Length: 456
Image 1 (cartoon, helix red, strand yellow):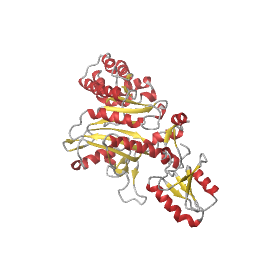
Image 2 (tube, helix red, strand yellow):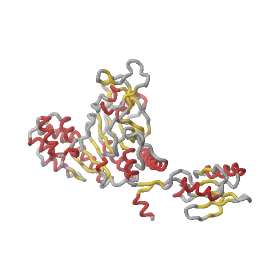
Image 3 (cartoon, rainbow, N blue to C red):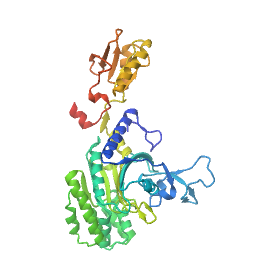
Image 4 (tube, rainbow, N blue to C red):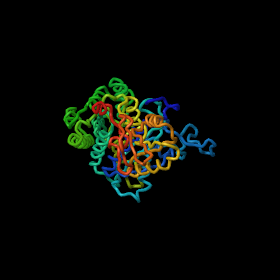
């Protein structure tokens, strides 16, 4: 980021930085809507019981209470979270599951939604990890069942959306929980959730420490630990991972099902998003509600930032009596992406304000006429503002330059008009009902550093 926030973990952007963020958000909205996802927004608060019912880390959840607390309003009682107290949501998937259950009678299934909102999480602030941040999610939820084909589609939509952003190359690293859990059972490790938690630490602590954890905490033999690590070491850009898993000599029906599902995702990605997706059998995902496909995404050359997009299949997160609402979805960490774009100068806005034209004032009496000119330009979609004071034209031009406005409009005493490109100094006759700036100057453009260098 360009500056240090006064309150750590709660980023605020300067106007030109916000334009980069808006470009990211608008691009994501456009791609999601092109694929038929409709927008929803859920409330910022949920009950503590709702947020923590699937094994999330309660110490990261921000409780909500008034400064003048009502009796019983404390979100923590006797060292334990009060399930009826309110807390800020830490992701969008858990609130979405509640939303689906409560509104099931009004939704058409499979329900396709995207959601872009702030979330709050009590993490240690650092680049890529904020306490208040924006996520952009897409999910498809079914009623009773959800065909596996949606797992494939979600991955392809995200690959298309990320490809449209001003970011470095990326890789979707995909695994399948059924594959992993079936393999662990096949080698005699029944605490599959515990194995997944250990494997999830592989990149942080290394294989030797993971093997130690498997043996000390889960009672795995050295052979079992090595087998689990061999599985986690498989990574391919095509479906050859299937043969590699088979050579490990483990048999299990759930393993076979997971292999088949992951093969479908990777096969489709090879055809429709070549080079963007890899089968990575070390991916576990920490949250307990995932049941099949799991995804993490990294920027190539920026892997230390962590995953910029993650998620997967969840079959039991949303239910109402005997009615189940299985889903699959992915979440893009917008703030994490934007912070890296800005801190590394990976992309920049072409100017710091939306305004394309400043209408100059020849005198204070010309303000009404200047507003008429501005209204004509705006009616044709040209962002325009009017100078506040009739200073010398040189000062008005300098003001436009400070603001990043590329054009200044002048009206002569005889009613004719001229417009000046203050970057080149070129000044030409113009009419407010017909003149338009070049398309690249009409709106703010956001380009990567590589694109700017190529243009120059």
